Length: 333
Image: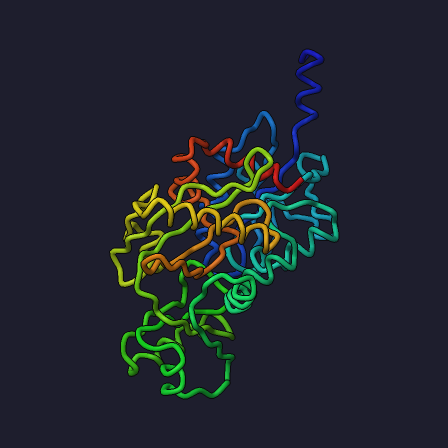
């Protein structure tokens, strides 16, 4: 029979759904991120259950079994007990967890998530919309144009607007899936076709020569806090899927850049977090051209595997994975 204080402590645990999978090519990355959470979450504070969402099924993984989720109220029957959840650790990269769809579902059920709300997620998932909003706030962004499926375009007009080299990528997507760098005009059509395979709207963006850095932001001890900055040195032509997930890049934390520039990037990252009404953890990607800071992308559900950048940055700050996960969960309450 447990002592009284142990029973009270047990009942104080929060039931957390670690939601992963998704409908995009990033689902494999999501599953790695979810496993990191399951491996490192503080089980004295939280009782986690991995929930996998696919196009065909929503199910919980429990002791080797797959148990279907009741989507009407996001509960699951385990050993004749209906399991409910106090919160959702959202770790789906891509649709439907990074674009506001699931956030709306959980908002209707009054279950908090570790990401921003529906508006925040839908806006930041759309690269063009994000850069337009950031531009109105005075942040420096790259020149770009967007194309929709079936929309006519002129290679000459595109190149006149954004120049060469340029990047062609899905407007809504991540992990650099469907992204190409175009160095010569003859390669533009192929790059556009590749991007359209991943999304029905694409963005063509100017190439900015400079250093690529990225900065995570979390809520730490009640304060919006920028983590140490990482410089990305890709062994590929750019920081593509292989560079990100197959060891084809060098990630240097803290980034060896000018101290004042370092301070400005951290301050700008915290400002973006606040202005876009973010929650949980985000990662902001930049290109530094001399003393100019260009915002390239805001990742509101960044990679979170054992080797991902956010855990690396937190470790340099002296925050281990258990404390980092707890901070992300606590920020949603």
